[in-house]
Length: 214
Ligand code: AMP
Image (cartoon, rainbow, N blue to C red; front, side):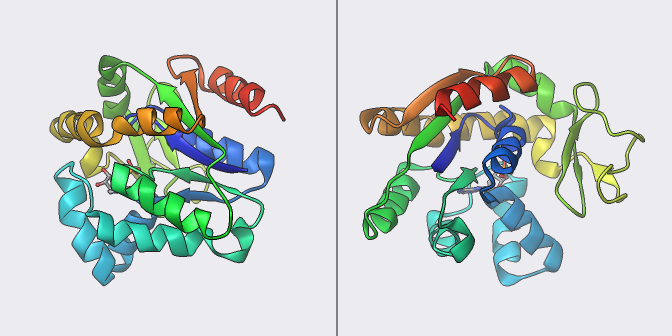
């Protein structure tokens, strides 16, 4: 099962992608996590990506496409995967499709999690992420057991630069301009499915599982 998560930043793609990956035993591939890991390690890729991310913009396609195409070609992706945060532009989607077509593959479902902008703004201000393992929390909806500390690895939780209010506004603009057109793109391929992302995260997950029919 080859899945893509669509939706605005903060719509809950990451949370749902992790739950899907666990249930169906497929890798969860988050380009945002890959970039953040590279920034932390101080790699060349990380250095290049950071300025775009901190400004709320997208990292250029050429820095992300090869990375994802390589990743989905690895052995653990043989039975499928869930892509979270990729594609984010039409050229990225086209590159992915072209790479998959070489082995007669295609994206099975593009799961579009719909949440109005105002809900996103409210949600993202409360989001906290672990500096070490990338686990995400929300101060109201998914609080960690101990404030400011990751349940999974004990490291500190932070408000990511790209979750700060001014950056969120910019990220929503970028989403509407560059990523939202993907809904139409996957609709035309009969791959797009829509989920009401304002529901409780477990209800969103149940709706996804129902749609996937497994
Ligand atoms: P995310 O964790 O998916 O919200 O991603 C955080 C940031 O990483 C985004 O705001 C972008 O700057 C960058 N990013 C992640 N995935 C992509 C992508 N597919 N294309 C371009 N930039 C990306």
